[in-house]
Image 1 (cartoon, rainbow, N blue to C red):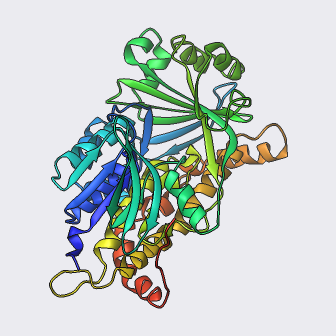
Image 2: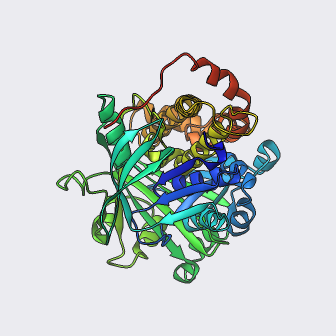
Length: 458
């Protein structure tokens, strides 16, 4: 059999999870990595993104973190405010995150993170990108060999044979559909009832308003909260851009086809949604140019029966899409990539480095799934719970929440906004997914030794 580092690794999707998969395997010494991406190029767009210590820990291992950090904002506090009045309900000071967890909590531009990962991939001769190429179907799941059909935009469909297929193709994952179909299971994508506007305002646009400039020049992450709605805001790109991400009821997609995830938004409708928020928020929303409002539908699916079949496994949103209320979506995908590379590289080999048993690949991927499934499920559930808490309307539950917000001002106290709660931060930020994989792989791998993990043909 081949040297394990000569295994053919095929990655579907070149988003955060796909780029991270390619880079993770290259950094572990794998020499044949192919990435298939439907888009014609990686024109990085998007808005702000949370860069938590558990993400920085992974990126630092790959040599990607320093450049991202140089452009990011280190968050030193979190202010939770009543949307209608701008009254501060809670202020959580966070000056010691780096001391506690080895890395600061930062916020940055999605293009900075994706661009750094792509730049890292470009430096690796083992990685080849196939742009304008979509996966049409999976014909065999392995583990003897995986076969899928790739279709270039301007070429003929052709079969690709590979050793491991990593599906980082997002919530619309074609691989997930094929995998679940092969095991007579399913998990339909479902609406969360929520949608988001993502807005970036430049310093030039905010320069006329001292109150806005104070926000842009701060190191504070804000949440303005109201019934069924909230806005998260923070400065990015060396304090040159103010990022706002909203969450509100998903009304504009009600009549849209189920495949629709984004729509050109109406500025008037956006202003109406937040019409009862404070003047500062309304002034910022009013700066968004007419015609540049875009709304994202936030979608999910129920927990999957399995992420893995044969030598095929799912990554990131393909297996655990999350609402954005913990800021861990991209981080979980990148952690997935680090863990799956760690597991495959730890597969037992002969003295000459050659793979002894192809079933071992299936077991290694199952170990990856076992290491990641409970943790990601917990964070997905916590994000949903936090959103429900932030969106409470008038009543006893809101009164109790606001009392807890006030208590949350005390250092170390729990906070209803889970993202800002020290106990939740400790659980998330202290996690080292690579070290956990290294420490637990052998025991978990042995536990699968008696199981038959061969794949099936589609």
